[in-house]
Length: 291
Ligand SMILES: N[C@@H](CCC[C@H](N)C(=O)O)C(=O)O
Image (cartoon, rainbow, N blue to C red; front, top):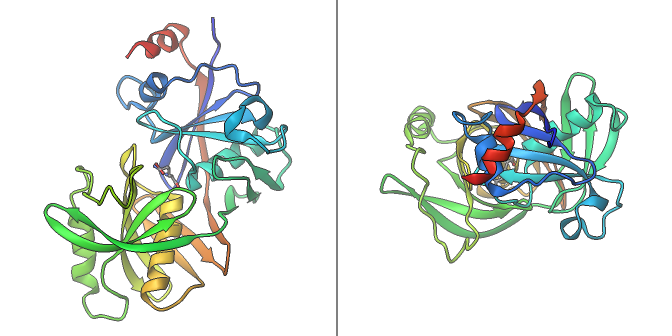
Protein backbone atom coordinates (compact mmCIF):
# COMPACT_ATOMS: atom_id res chain seq x y z
CA UNK A 1 0.00 0.00 0.00
CA UNK A 2 1.36 3.46 -0.88
CA UNK A 3 1.27 5.83 2.09
CA UNK A 4 0.85 9.32 0.62
CA UNK A 5 1.26 12.30 2.92
CA UNK A 6 0.05 15.74 1.83
CA UNK A 7 0.15 19.34 3.01
CA UNK A 8 -2.36 21.95 1.85
CA UNK A 9 -1.11 25.52 1.46
CA UNK A 10 -1.64 28.73 -0.44
CA UNK A 11 0.09 31.93 -1.50
CA UNK A 12 -2.40 34.81 -1.69
CA UNK A 13 -5.10 32.13 -2.16
CA UNK A 14 -3.41 30.48 -5.13
CA UNK A 15 -3.71 27.04 -3.51
CA UNK A 16 -1.60 23.92 -3.75
CA UNK A 17 -1.27 20.36 -2.54
CA UNK A 18 2.30 19.65 -1.46
CA UNK A 19 3.39 16.00 -1.80
CA UNK A 20 6.64 15.10 0.03
CA UNK A 21 8.46 12.52 -2.13
CA UNK A 22 12.19 12.90 -1.49
CA UNK A 23 13.24 9.81 -3.43
CA UNK A 24 10.80 10.19 -6.32
CA UNK A 25 8.81 7.05 -5.46
CA UNK A 26 5.31 8.43 -6.08
CA UNK A 27 3.59 7.48 -9.34
CA UNK A 28 2.14 10.97 -9.84
CA UNK A 29 0.14 10.53 -13.03
CA UNK A 30 -1.88 13.29 -14.71
CA UNK A 31 -5.06 11.46 -13.63
CA UNK A 32 -3.96 11.62 -10.00
CA UNK A 33 -3.10 15.32 -10.26
CA UNK A 34 -6.56 16.04 -11.72
CA UNK A 35 -8.24 14.00 -8.96
CA UNK A 36 -6.22 15.70 -6.20
CA UNK A 37 -7.03 19.19 -7.53
CA UNK A 38 -10.74 18.47 -8.08
CA UNK A 39 -12.65 20.48 -5.45
CA UNK A 40 -15.40 17.85 -5.15
CA UNK A 41 -13.89 14.41 -5.64
CA UNK A 42 -10.44 15.33 -4.31
CA UNK A 43 -8.81 17.81 -1.94
CA UNK A 44 -9.08 20.79 -4.31
CA UNK A 45 -6.23 23.03 -5.48
CA UNK A 46 -4.90 25.06 -8.39
CA UNK A 47 -1.85 22.81 -8.65
CA UNK A 48 0.38 20.16 -7.08
CA UNK A 49 3.91 20.70 -5.77
CA UNK A 50 5.88 17.45 -5.48
CA UNK A 51 8.87 17.82 -3.16
CA UNK A 52 11.63 15.70 -4.64
CA UNK A 53 15.42 15.71 -4.59
CA UNK A 54 16.77 16.89 -7.97
CA UNK A 55 18.89 13.74 -8.13
CA UNK A 56 15.77 11.56 -7.95
CA UNK A 57 13.93 13.32 -10.78
CA UNK A 58 16.13 12.60 -13.78
CA UNK A 59 15.98 14.69 -16.97
CA UNK A 60 13.91 17.74 -15.82
CA UNK A 61 16.54 18.40 -13.13
CA UNK A 62 19.59 17.65 -15.31
CA UNK A 63 22.62 19.72 -14.34
CA UNK A 64 21.29 20.65 -10.89
CA UNK A 65 22.93 19.66 -7.61
CA UNK A 66 21.34 16.25 -6.91
CA UNK A 67 20.68 17.27 -3.29
CA UNK A 68 18.71 20.39 -4.26
CA UNK A 69 15.00 20.26 -3.42
CA UNK A 70 13.11 20.40 -6.71
CA UNK A 71 9.58 21.79 -7.11
CA UNK A 72 7.91 19.34 -9.51
CA UNK A 73 4.95 21.61 -10.32
CA UNK A 74 1.77 20.36 -12.03
CA UNK A 75 -1.19 22.43 -13.18
CA UNK A 76 -4.65 21.29 -12.02
CA UNK A 77 -5.33 19.77 -15.45
CA UNK A 78 -2.40 17.37 -14.96
CA UNK A 79 0.77 18.26 -16.91
CA UNK A 80 4.04 19.54 -15.51
CA UNK A 81 4.86 23.13 -16.53
CA UNK A 82 7.91 25.32 -16.11
CA UNK A 83 7.35 27.57 -13.15
CA UNK A 84 4.97 28.79 -10.44
CA UNK A 85 5.85 31.89 -8.41
CA UNK A 86 3.31 31.43 -5.63
CA UNK A 87 4.12 27.72 -5.62
CA UNK A 88 7.82 28.36 -5.00
CA UNK A 89 6.95 30.50 -1.98
CA UNK A 90 4.66 27.83 -0.48
CA UNK A 91 7.25 25.16 -1.31
CA UNK A 92 10.00 27.17 0.45
CA UNK A 93 7.83 27.71 3.51
CA UNK A 94 7.11 23.97 3.66
CA UNK A 95 10.84 23.08 3.43
CA UNK A 96 11.60 25.33 6.40
CA UNK A 97 8.57 24.29 8.49
CA UNK A 98 9.34 20.61 7.99
CA UNK A 99 13.00 21.07 8.94
CA UNK A 100 14.29 19.97 5.53
CA UNK A 101 16.23 23.23 5.22
CA UNK A 102 17.29 25.89 7.71
CA UNK A 103 15.46 29.25 7.68
CA UNK A 104 17.09 32.00 5.68
CA UNK A 105 18.33 31.86 2.13
CA UNK A 106 18.54 28.78 -0.09
CA UNK A 107 17.71 27.68 -3.64
CA UNK A 108 14.87 25.60 -5.07
CA UNK A 109 15.11 23.67 -8.34
CA UNK A 110 12.41 24.29 -10.96
CA UNK A 111 11.95 23.46 -14.64
CA UNK A 112 12.95 27.04 -15.37
CA UNK A 113 16.19 26.77 -13.40
CA UNK A 114 17.18 27.16 -9.73
CA UNK A 115 15.37 29.96 -7.87
CA UNK A 116 17.03 31.57 -4.83
CA UNK A 117 14.53 32.22 -2.01
CA UNK A 118 14.50 33.90 1.39
CA UNK A 119 12.02 32.76 4.05
CA UNK A 120 11.35 35.28 6.80
CA UNK A 121 10.08 34.27 10.25
CA UNK A 122 6.61 35.70 9.60
CA UNK A 123 5.99 33.41 6.60
CA UNK A 124 6.83 36.11 4.07
CA UNK A 125 8.87 34.61 1.25
CA UNK A 126 10.89 36.40 -1.42
CA UNK A 127 11.81 34.57 -4.63
CA UNK A 128 14.44 35.67 -7.08
CA UNK A 129 12.46 35.09 -10.28
CA UNK A 130 15.33 35.80 -12.67
CA UNK A 131 15.18 37.70 -15.94
CA UNK A 132 11.83 38.83 -17.33
CA UNK A 133 11.63 39.00 -21.12
CA UNK A 134 9.03 41.33 -22.64
CA UNK A 135 8.14 40.20 -26.17
CA UNK A 136 5.81 41.19 -28.96
CA UNK A 137 2.43 42.90 -28.62
CA UNK A 138 -0.53 40.54 -28.90
CA UNK A 139 -4.24 40.55 -28.08
CA UNK A 140 -6.60 38.72 -25.76
CA UNK A 141 -10.38 38.68 -26.19
CA UNK A 142 -13.03 38.24 -23.51
CA UNK A 143 -16.72 38.18 -24.34
CA UNK A 144 -15.99 39.44 -27.86
CA UNK A 145 -14.01 42.44 -26.59
CA UNK A 146 -10.33 42.70 -27.56
CA UNK A 147 -7.62 43.80 -25.12
CA UNK A 148 -4.15 44.88 -26.22
CA UNK A 149 -1.38 43.11 -24.39
CA UNK A 150 2.22 42.08 -24.57
CA UNK A 151 3.91 38.68 -24.38
CA UNK A 152 6.04 38.29 -21.26
CA UNK A 153 8.27 35.32 -20.49
CA UNK A 154 8.79 34.76 -16.74
CA UNK A 155 10.04 31.22 -17.28
CA UNK A 156 6.46 30.43 -18.30
CA UNK A 157 4.37 32.28 -20.92
CA UNK A 158 2.14 35.27 -20.17
CA UNK A 159 0.00 37.71 -22.10
CA UNK A 160 -0.27 40.82 -19.93
CA UNK A 161 -3.01 43.31 -20.88
CA UNK A 162 -2.81 46.72 -19.23
CA UNK A 163 -6.15 48.54 -19.13
CA UNK A 164 -5.52 52.31 -19.28
CA UNK A 165 -3.00 54.16 -17.15
CA UNK A 166 -2.82 55.52 -13.61
CA UNK A 167 -2.73 59.04 -15.06
CA UNK A 168 -6.10 59.01 -16.84
CA UNK A 169 -9.30 59.97 -15.03
CA UNK A 170 -11.08 56.70 -15.82
CA UNK A 171 -9.82 54.71 -12.82
CA UNK A 172 -13.32 53.86 -11.60
CA UNK A 173 -14.62 52.64 -14.95
CA UNK A 174 -11.42 50.64 -15.54
CA UNK A 175 -11.85 48.99 -12.12
CA UNK A 176 -15.45 48.12 -13.03
CA UNK A 177 -14.34 46.75 -16.38
CA UNK A 178 -11.80 44.55 -14.58
CA UNK A 179 -14.36 43.34 -12.04
CA UNK A 180 -16.92 42.55 -14.75
CA UNK A 181 -14.66 40.45 -16.99
CA UNK A 182 -16.10 36.97 -17.41
CA UNK A 183 -13.07 34.74 -16.82
CA UNK A 184 -15.14 31.57 -16.41
CA UNK A 185 -14.42 31.20 -20.12
CA UNK A 186 -10.74 31.14 -21.23
CA UNK A 187 -9.72 34.38 -22.99
CA UNK A 188 -9.05 33.94 -26.71
CA UNK A 189 -5.43 34.47 -27.80
CA UNK A 190 -3.25 33.99 -30.87
CA UNK A 191 -1.99 30.38 -30.83
CA UNK A 192 0.74 31.22 -33.32
CA UNK A 193 2.29 33.52 -30.68
CA UNK A 194 1.57 31.11 -27.80
CA UNK A 195 1.75 27.58 -29.25
CA UNK A 196 1.98 26.03 -25.75
CA UNK A 197 -0.92 28.03 -24.30
CA UNK A 198 -0.64 31.12 -22.13
CA UNK A 199 -1.54 32.69 -18.81
CA UNK A 200 -3.52 35.88 -19.41
CA UNK A 201 -3.42 38.87 -17.02
CA UNK A 202 -5.69 41.92 -17.00
CA UNK A 203 -4.16 44.80 -15.09
CA UNK A 204 -5.56 48.14 -13.95
CA UNK A 205 -2.86 50.62 -12.83
CA UNK A 206 -4.23 52.47 -9.78
CA UNK A 207 -1.28 54.62 -8.79
CA UNK A 208 2.25 54.91 -10.15
CA UNK A 209 3.37 51.90 -8.10
CA UNK A 210 0.10 50.07 -7.46
CA UNK A 211 -2.04 47.95 -9.76
CA UNK A 212 -4.99 45.56 -9.57
CA UNK A 213 -4.89 42.31 -11.49
CA UNK A 214 -7.05 39.35 -12.45
CA UNK A 215 -5.65 36.30 -14.19
CA UNK A 216 -6.78 33.31 -16.20
CA UNK A 217 -4.17 30.58 -15.82
CA UNK A 218 -3.25 28.04 -18.44
CA UNK A 219 -4.27 24.58 -17.24
CA UNK A 220 -6.29 25.90 -14.29
CA UNK A 221 -8.83 28.67 -15.06
CA UNK A 222 -9.26 31.90 -13.15
CA UNK A 223 -7.19 31.78 -9.97
CA UNK A 224 -7.18 34.24 -7.07
CA UNK A 225 -3.51 35.04 -7.64
CA UNK A 226 -0.56 34.12 -9.86
CA UNK A 227 3.00 34.97 -8.82
CA UNK A 228 4.59 34.78 -12.26
CA UNK A 229 1.52 36.66 -13.52
CA UNK A 230 2.16 39.57 -11.16
CA UNK A 231 5.76 39.78 -12.38
CA UNK A 232 4.51 39.78 -15.99
CA UNK A 233 1.93 42.43 -15.05
CA UNK A 234 4.54 44.74 -13.56
CA UNK A 235 6.84 44.29 -16.58
CA UNK A 236 3.91 45.28 -18.82
CA UNK A 237 2.95 48.33 -16.72
CA UNK A 238 6.57 49.51 -16.62
CA UNK A 239 6.80 49.11 -20.40
CA UNK A 240 3.55 51.04 -20.88
CA UNK A 241 4.96 53.92 -18.85
CA UNK A 242 8.36 53.94 -20.53
CA UNK A 243 10.16 52.30 -17.60
CA UNK A 244 12.25 49.12 -17.53
CA UNK A 245 12.91 48.86 -13.80
CA UNK A 246 10.74 49.52 -10.78
CA UNK A 247 8.95 48.20 -7.73
CA UNK A 248 5.16 47.82 -7.59
CA UNK A 249 2.46 46.40 -5.37
CA UNK A 250 -0.05 44.19 -7.16
CA UNK A 251 -3.46 43.54 -5.63
CA UNK A 252 -4.99 40.25 -6.74
CA UNK A 253 -8.37 38.91 -5.55
CA UNK A 254 -6.39 36.75 -3.08
CA UNK A 255 -4.08 39.41 -1.66
CA UNK A 256 -1.17 41.72 -2.26
CA UNK A 257 2.23 40.84 -3.74
CA UNK A 258 5.31 43.01 -4.18
CA UNK A 259 7.29 42.80 -7.40
CA UNK A 260 10.68 44.37 -8.08
CA UNK A 261 12.10 44.34 -11.58
CA UNK A 262 15.76 45.22 -12.02
CA UNK A 263 17.95 45.23 -15.11
CA UNK A 264 18.18 41.50 -15.60
CA UNK A 265 16.45 40.07 -12.56
CA UNK A 266 13.20 40.28 -10.62
CA UNK A 267 11.90 39.51 -7.13
CA UNK A 268 8.49 38.43 -5.91
CA UNK A 269 7.56 38.87 -2.24
CA UNK A 270 4.46 37.80 -0.37
CA UNK A 271 2.91 35.49 2.21
CA UNK A 272 3.00 31.70 2.03
CA UNK A 273 0.55 29.83 4.26
CA UNK A 274 0.48 26.17 5.29
CA UNK A 275 -3.09 25.19 6.17
CA UNK A 276 -3.22 21.49 7.05
CA UNK A 277 -1.57 18.15 6.62
CA UNK A 278 -2.83 14.60 6.35
CA UNK A 279 -2.66 11.27 4.56
CA UNK A 280 -4.51 10.22 1.43
CA UNK A 281 -6.78 7.20 1.63
CA UNK A 282 -4.93 4.30 -0.05
CA UNK A 283 -7.98 3.10 -2.01
CA UNK A 284 -8.73 6.67 -3.17
CA UNK A 285 -5.12 7.03 -4.41
CA UNK A 286 -5.37 3.73 -6.28
CA UNK A 287 -8.70 4.61 -7.90
CA UNK A 288 -7.64 8.19 -8.67
CA UNK A 289 -5.42 6.70 -11.35
CA UNK A 290 -8.39 5.37 -13.31
CA UNK A 291 -10.08 8.60 -14.47
N1 LIG B 1 0.04 30.12 -10.28
C1 LIG B 1 1.37 30.11 -10.74
C2 LIG B 1 1.59 29.80 -12.19
C3 LIG B 1 1.31 28.31 -12.45
C4 LIG B 1 1.66 27.86 -13.83
C5 LIG B 1 0.77 28.42 -14.88
N2 LIG B 1 -0.62 28.02 -14.74
C6 LIG B 1 1.29 27.97 -16.26
O1 LIG B 1 0.68 27.08 -16.88
O2 LIG B 1 2.31 28.50 -16.70
C7 LIG B 1 2.19 31.26 -10.24
O3 LIG B 1 1.95 31.67 -9.10
O4 LIG B 1 3.12 31.70 -10.91
